[in-house]
Length: 432
Image (cartoon, rainbow, N blue to C red):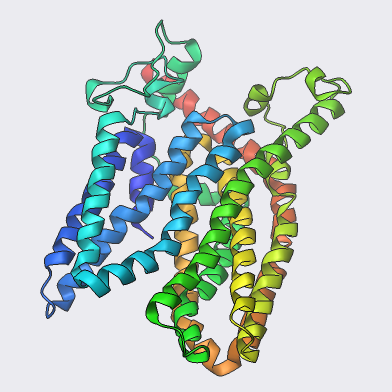
C-alpha cells in the first residue's frame, strides 16, 4: 500500500524501466527468502512478505504510468482495459494453481513458482522494454541514456531526427521529484479515489469471504473445488476489463463529438469534426470527467444488485450456481467501474500517471484492509444478507460523488495547470 507511493513517484522522476525491473527483482528475491524461511521464524516470514508485497503491488502503478506515456486519451481506455486483465485474472487462477502446487509439491513450491515467474518478467523488462517517460524521451524523438535503453530494442521505436521544441520543453520542465500526496490537495482526485476505494473494498469483501462462506454452507466442496469457484468472479473481471476498454473509448468519442459540435468546431458527421481526437489533450476545457464517468452509475446498479443478491442467496443457502453467477456479474460490473476511475485519474495528471495510480492503490489497499479485517465479524453479527445490504448501501450513498467530480473537475484541473505554469516560470527564472 505504501511502497507504490514511493516507487510510483520515483518512476515519474527517474523513468519507468529501471524501477519496473527493480520491483520485479525485489519480488523474486523476497520469494527466494520465503521459500527457504524456517517455519519457526514468524518475524522473518512477516518481513519477507512485506518485501514481497512492496515489489508486486508497485508494478501495477508502474504499468498505469507506461500507459499514460504511450497512449493518447482517445485510445487510453482500450490500453487500460487490456492491461488490467493481468491483475484481475491473477487472483482468480492463483487459488487453483496454489492448490495444485501445495497438494503435489508442498507449500514452499508456491514461492519457487513465483521466483521463476517474477525472474522471467524482470529479464524480459531488461531485454526489450524501452523507456517511456516523456520527461526523458519526449514522444520518442529523444534518445535516452544508454542505461535506460533496452538490450534488444525490438519495440523501442525511437524516432530519427531532432527532437521537437515541445519535447525539449517537456524534458526540461519535468525533471524533479514530486511528492505524490500533493495530488490529493485538489478535491476531485481524493473524492474520486475514496469512492473507488470503497467499491473496491466491497469487492474484496466478497472475494475474501468466498472460501470461508462456501466451506460452511456447501460442505460437500473439496478445497480444489472451492478454488475453482474463484474462476467465476475472476472470469467476470477479465471480461469486464476487456469490455471496459471498448466502452471507455466509445464514450470518449461520443462526448468528444458532442463537445466539438457544441463549440461549432465540427459538422454533422463524426468524420467532419474539425479538431482531431488526438488534440483533445491540448484542449483544457474538454470534459474528460464526463467522458469517462457518465456511464459509471449504470455499472454500479449491476454491481450493487449482484452484491445484495449474493448476500441473500448465501443466507438462504440456494443452489451453488446462483451465488456463482452473481459473483460473475459482480466481477464484470466492478471492473467496468474501477477501470473507468483508473483511466480518468491518469487523464487528470498524465505527467504523474504512476503517482496517481499509486494514490489509487493507497485508497484501495487501505479501505480494503479495513473491510477484510471486519468482514468475518460482520457476517457473524448481521448474517450475510444484511452484511451485504449494508456494504451495498454505503456504495449507494457515495454514488453522488461521481456527479460532484464531474461538476468540480474542470475547475480543479484549471488550478493544477495554473500551479504547474507558476512552477515552470520559477524554474525558468532560476535557470536564466
